[in-house]
Length: 88
Image (cartoon, rainbow, N blue to C red; front, side, top):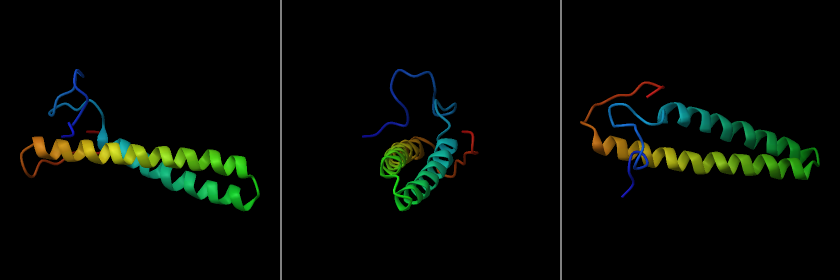
């Protein structure tokens, strides 16, 4: 079962170790931005640059999966109806 944050960290459910909503927003921006730039680089025949940006976009996808798993674990641990700001 996924945990809301790594064991041994100082954060708690009430005071998160990582600002998951902010990470979600930044990873989404990174995914969109680097995907668009990779396509532009590929069309300009800059294959090495397109591959580099595609790898960065793939890293953003992996980060999005990790974030969503931690957010789901956080939802399971908290009472229903709990809301979080962007920085929580």
